[in-house]
Length: 414
Image (cartoon, rainbow, N blue to C red):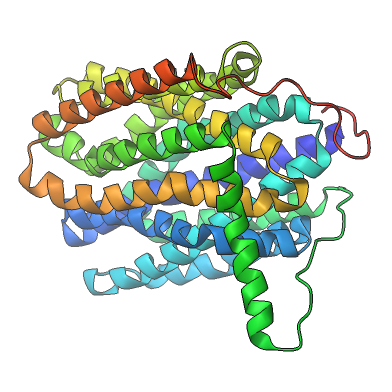
């Protein structure tokens, strides 16, 4: 079990390094080729847009063996990314956006498979700790990957960053292939004689994740809190290049420094998430995370490097608590054979507002001063945090579920 957990986290660490590097470099790449802050912000929108198909993609993850799916999806991305070597002028930026959409699609499928595989392999009592460690491994790459990506891009351009990301996908595929996890045979829809019957069954399965979220007094408020937080985070993210350029007077590559500091905050948040979720209500931890993000986003309006760096660290601390609280609740509350589609549905509900806000924010930053936009985000975030915390002290399902017994098969804790 420890070997499986170590391999899993290694795969997350390696792929997280490449993904973070590519995420940052894509924005700098578009900004450098086109000179447009709005188009640079839209690169992140392209990555998150496939979350719209989350329930369907999650159903796919529940219908096939999850570990092989993780292996082959990483292999496919390793083969696709070298195509970006052709993006060397503004008229080829469309190819970068097309690859980013595929990138985002693979990410949704992969995360749904990961969520289901963790439930099959781990004791439910340790899911919060494991999710926190996963967040630490993934977000901790922001300590290194943005600096590497920014430096590599500044010296050689975007092509080498794409090749680096392709290499990390290949290594991650190999690591996941070494995992030894006993998976139950995936449930499959009953065969019908007519095609429409099979389609209807798939539609019912796809909608099941939404039904589970809506029916659960534990999941519903946590997922809604995540959606609201990521809505605000999308507007904040769309403004990052404007903060760097107009507010701080730096080159676009300075965004890598801010993301690296945010990664440091996320490392602390991930390590603390598991112990905190065993001691405080999940809604309270989510509310604290939202409040920290709100204060930090508002502080970014101040044109000082020290404030901007501190705000990035606090954002890195607050956002993971909101997301870990919601994901751990999904893994504990959803039926084992529906974890993939429930996790993907929650992913859609949480991150579609983020994608929409990135698109809206890309337009807003052209007409609204960040000294007005960012403080307004802070006020909205604090209001949401207070509402969530107040309802959590009186509503049902306010606390994290009590530690559950061992998962099927009496597998030991990691």
